[in-house]
Amino acid sequence: MSGAENEIVVGKLDELADPGCREFRIGEGDWPFKGFIVRRGSDVFAYQNFCKHVGHPLNWQPDRFLNGDGSLIMCASHGALYEIDTGICISGPCPGKALNRVPVEIRDGNVVVRAPTDPEK
Image (cartoon, rainbow, N blue to C red):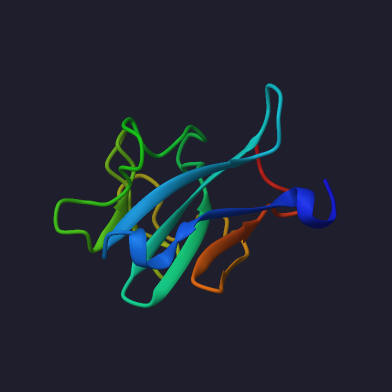
């Protein structure tokens, strides 16, 4: 992937809950890049949807990545908790490991993400 084909608009910032999440995929076929964004206030963070404990997706339900009070990213499988702004695991089976960041920016009110050039699978 190169250029605009590895970028997508995930949605409008003002349409995302605060805090809130949304999944995205970039690419086609059997192995698209899978990620998610998290909005907290006017900030947006993006990560690959890949748990650092066992490597499966963090969520079981669409767009559900946060713990009960919306303060941390939570892996639905084993309960690992990650900081929203750093992606660092602070509790659970993988302390100190960090989620893979995804480049994200706000353009004209839209949340735009770009697939990393060498994502972990």
